[in-house]
Image 1 (cartoon, one colour):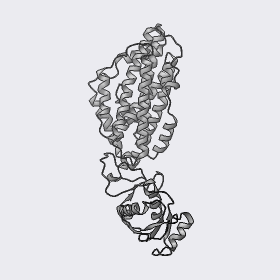
Image 2 (cartoon, rainbow, N blue to C red):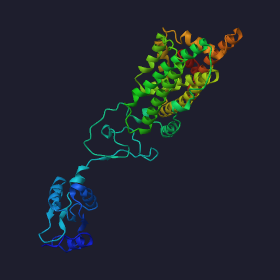
Image 3 (cartoon, rainbow, N blue to C red):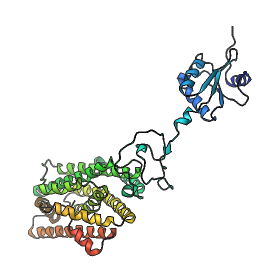
Image 4 (cartoon, helix red, strand yellow):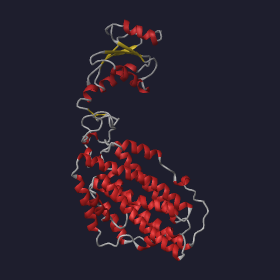
Length: 424
């Protein structure tokens, strides 16, 4: 009867004593672990630490180990020499081949994870980097992805990482952030005004959701932080659509009116093919204008739910506007001539909407009702005055942002006045 095969230190000693392998050969004792049970992971790890041509003596008690090692070595480009009969536990010796290293010939490191590190973010990432993580070693021969937005000058914003962290930390749950059961009673006409305003907001938030979503799949994933900001922005707008819809139907009313002029205005945003211009028109001008509107609703909303949804949306929109301003500032710092393109985009959109009526009367009147707070004649007059002030505040906000981007004050005032009367 043959003695049981050695394992552990005895196997190592037997391997070193066995004829054939040189004294400096490395030894791996698999004990009773078979190759089909995960031992191949250990063999790979041991070989990876050896130079090409070096030997690894593998021992173990699995009866099929030698047969499995032969097949495995052949499949992975190594040479396998079985242990001679009577050598005890060693199953054989693997001489490391070069196939695994050859496989990575021509591979390239796709930048680095930390965007602040030198060379971390490429000016124009390779199409073959595709969906690989920034910083990964990308094997040669990977398929090429056709991401249309692969120019750092057009896409990258150094503040994107901070903006994303802020956005992720500022997420809120519509189910818990708003007390939907907070009791209140409104005059039916005031409730109708709230519903009309919410209907209008939903329509505009749909546009604010679709525009970044359209570009989201076009930005090369190498610009990870920008993609993340856009993704959160889409999620923000989806949440706004939810809470405005829920407030509109809170008392069981049907939704209000959607006008052809409003839809025409928003269509010009969706049809803008240039990422920089679309971001400018949406986030700097459109959402920038909405900051004043949401602040107005936060102050004059007739019930706690309306005021709360406006307050939450306002915080998100302020972040979108800040990111848009940072992006534009960096674009203009790299290429000041882009200022002319921004002006042309405003003028082109104004011309396209010249035949439309702008903000529908129902929305304007609804805002007057909310600002008035009652149907008393003087209160209505006061509400009317407040809405005019709101429009002036919107225009002044646009003018300030345009000046901040580099437009001369007079030119900024003229361009601010050309913004769509539909606000967004």
